[in-house]
Length: 311
Ligand code: AMP
Image (cartoon, rainbow, N blue to C red; front, top):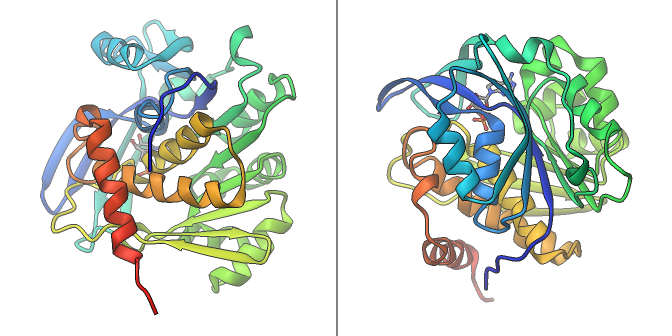
């Protein structure tokens, strides 16, 4: 598959944060994280016209922001709150790396954030509403000019626990919802993912993507189901951000090809899975920051080989 860098506008929102993470491989403290950070880095390998809307405190390193700008991420929509702390999350992974416990979620700057989408970003055609307060995701949608081609929403169990009604409102306004299998079960009240998908697609989105960690991702679109595996890796260092990296690759690829056919959406799922497979190879964004287009192409080819068979 040829990757191309063209100028389609993509708006990304979500947390830009510090994380403390424990995995069986070790512990890292206050490293760079956040849903929007992973999404933007991942998408930047496909499009260089990214508008980021988020909030940090003045404790967030300037060089990290510069590094994102160098990748084509426009930070006009990033509010830096003086004297306040950035969002902080801490989690510990279980031995199987597929499940984790959240130890701390400090909203900090996020607690009282009113996003302002810069004028130039209101007409962005591709929108990635990364994980953060559902009400804030809704406020961003309110500011768009209505010409959007694709709006994707990611969220997590935390928001289902504390803001379910608000979350359902935003879900009803988007085209694609990405969540993991446990979250799909929680949101729908159904154990079977096929039944869960039916319930969730009734809530508004046309497409549901269920992320299953090391077991890949399922796409539900009408009655059609498509499966993309995850790459079997000898070592998974840190799964943090894999879902966001998937989302960034998925929408970044769609924004760069500007093709929303069912076939291209399947390709985008494979691209997202390939990007996620890099993310988990190291802590924080370390691996995502050093990729080359050749490596990405090679990885996508591996995915093709993984599922190719003839009868
Ligand atoms: P993922 O592993 O894809 O679920 O994403 C992990 C990232 O999401 C971490 O870098 C965290 O900073 C961020 N995060 C954790 N909890 C939340 C939350 N409740 N809302 C928004 N972002 C979060």
